[in-house]
Amino acid sequence: MTSTAPHNLYNVIEERWLAPDRLPTSDELDQAVSALDGVAEFLTDPIARGCVTVGNAGEANAVDFEQIGRLVLWADDVRYAVERIAESAEMVSIIARETFPNMARGGDGDGTPYDENTGNLQKGTYYEKLQRRLGFGDA
Image (cartoon, rainbow, N blue to C red; front, top):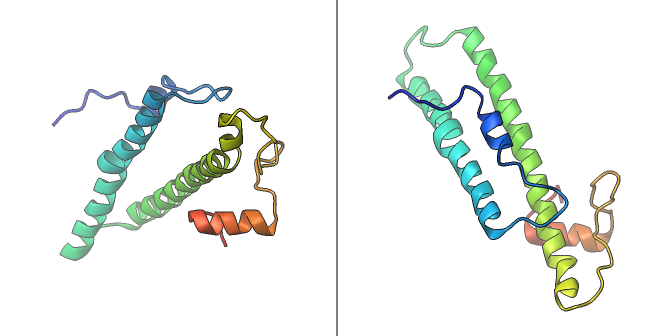
């Protein structure tokens, strides 16, 4: 099967860039999740399955050290990208649960538990417990 997709998918995603100065629409949220699902389904999952197939076949010289190096570097790059995505999901989840309800009830917002300069979660027992409860963070 021949693909007509552009060589660089980053450019395709960049065309759908979401402005960071507003909340996304429901459709934009759905598109973001769909794009991530597509990356897994059509890019990362097939690479992992290919490695399993080749590894299980166990044929001598089916892989060389250059390929091994590329795969290890690729896995590290993917892990880094996934960590960035998980950090963004954590931030959205905590702000949506902790900051937005008061605003939705008509109250003024009192800020978020994130440092505006670094984007890091402010350290404190309450927020660390919240991270654990929501399944985020190192705790």
